[in-house]
Image 1 (cartoon, rainbow, N blue to C red):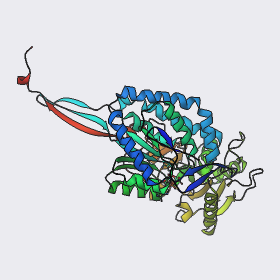
Image 2: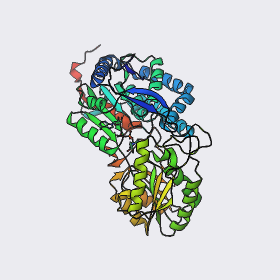
Image 3: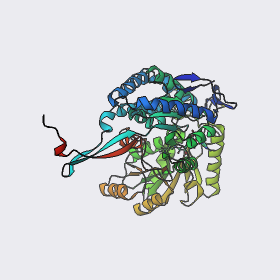
Length: 487
Ligand code: NAD
């Protein structure tokens, strides 16, 4: 049974409901997670508020010492954490390692807080009057995470929250709570004062308790768009600041002059990496003009050669999807696409993965002739399914990107600088790739996202996170000369 970590202590939840944590490749039960009641959020919030009064007074240079320790502990336990991610989430070990690397990178960036958190100062805004800004922590914060990056996503926020002097509560996804449990054993070893960081396992009841708790001042959420919208509205109605990252439907555009080899490799990695369960996964490939024929042939060949299986097996390129329900939903959406007039170029449904018959596997799937107006072209599938659309001009392709309700990522493949600039300038998406799939921005850049893919204004990571986790105080000051004593 997994535990909560509140006020520096591991505690057994008083939950009466539990869920099994299931390995999506083998169906083996890895543990049991409590669906904690709201009262445990209340205990965590009170502990965090208490800790805040002293934690915010610790100099930033001292606060980051705990993060330096955390960085070292994460490095020491790197392989074990990556393995845990693969066990509970299904992705390959290489993908899990990539995820943990980005988590650590965020700790490294937050260690720069003594500089990142500085305010601005201007002397003589009027004669003898100086004005400056100070960045102060906001107080108790909370982080609510999705299932697809159990190690990385809380790190888009947590290191910055702590470094800025806030205290925090983390609620991992109930589908993949094991990685955060292990990370909390490491956080405990850093010697962070009690109450500074708390873990409450659970689902909706925990989220609702966070949203309504009067002590909690700021909420960072990542998950599907309907829940992101819900969290954002309820947090705002309760006077909290919120940054809520939602779902996506990401197009990549292939122009006729694109380098085919690079384009195919990157498209396949982007569409089928993590079994398509990434908010930055390419899910539509739009070929322009003569790009259609060569691209279609090459991508279908690569899709068929991807090795699908258990993520711990080194030769495997792609693991299972998270649950049996996800698998059924994805297979249903593929059928929906066919019913809407698309044709199946590569069909990955119901594969036989020898030795893993209980796993939730779908092999890479490609749907051709997808109608841009159809549901399959507009719905987030969150599985290894790539839809192909053909258009005549780059303007048509940009119009397609901009007509989408989503705005997480859009990519262009071309060898034309002018086309690249036009795309970068005109495409309405928060993350843009030129001859590259956007895997996730580096930690020192914000993880952007527009339209229905994001609710809020300040994103996770880098300077945006520092701004989110601080409130600006403006001080205007006058010390008239005649008040100065002559020494
Ligand atoms: P989800 O929305 O089902 O769950 C996310 C979190 O919300 C979990 O902690 C869950 O316990 C909680 N939750 C679920 N239902 C709730 C409800 N009714 N009320 C209150 N809380 C609730 O998302 P998921 O399936 O875990 O993750 C996949 C989704 O996350 C995809 O849509 C994906 O695109 C998105 N995602 C977005 C980003 C991004 O940066 N934009 C990154 C990763 C994942």
